[in-house]
Image 1 (cartoon, rainbow, N blue to C red):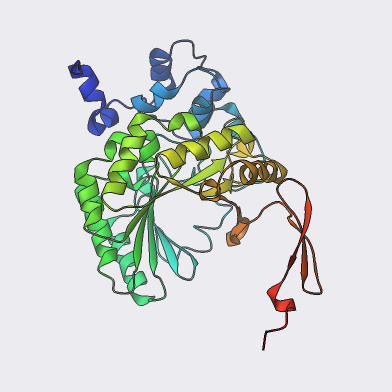
Image 2 (cartoon, rainbow, N blue to C red):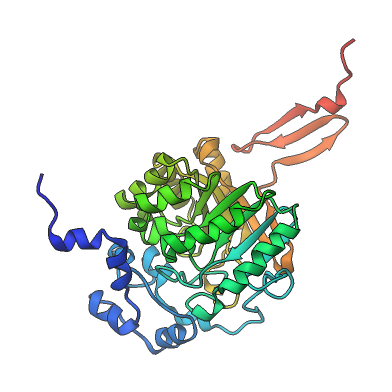
Length: 368
């Protein structure tokens, strides 16, 4: 087998990838032949920071918004559309942040915003108000207050370390953050929310995985949105996590022009199963300022879910979820399969449209 060149070997190093991030549209034009940079794109990039790794750039096949990778990461004038949406429609900062950088919406779990940086900035990000702005990240004193808050609230059993992307932190720094929460007796699990397996898979190296393994039980949730993102590199990254005992789940965001076709979502779910990543959520795109052009009608989500139930085994079917504004929380929704429930009999519509009945055990008398 031919050994890789020095250049090829460097591109497989996450530090090299970070050092060579594309950070401006002018640089994108130099690196991506055929791309057309408009004034609207420049205004969007000025309002919402832009960066991507050379790895993400390599996944773009067509240099325009019809390409599902290009659309996710390259600024679009549509981000500037005027509407009444706020940057924080979910109320993370305004209603559910007891201390800076900590979100406590559900009784048993909190989110710690550990970093404001990412290997690539998703244009559909629900935290566009924070990412790419280092001043938005938690400081060491913020972390102290977060840890103290969790310690004082023993009902919190699950700490989700998010961002930005927490894997933008150096491994030693992330180790210290996790260790602080892991030392709290009432905390059962640590979750890492990261797109690194998608945007910078070489970041998932042995050093990182060995560190995470020391803090078990640790779970990772990532975000593959299109089957083309499931590459040999991302498969290797997920396999490395799994071999260190770290389960990997996927939270796909339903995005117009990226994955809002049943066949695309089926291909994605099948690709995830092949690399042993569990399709966990299909998230309706959050109604946040700057993301309106990505949003689809809920009816499209129902159409996709009906197709998945018909075409893919249950292990590969995610839950379809909306995150309600003003802190209403994540709510699972789905097509209407229950027609009626009367006199102990459920009348149902199955995935093929057939009407079937099911006798509810509550309507049956116990045997003597």
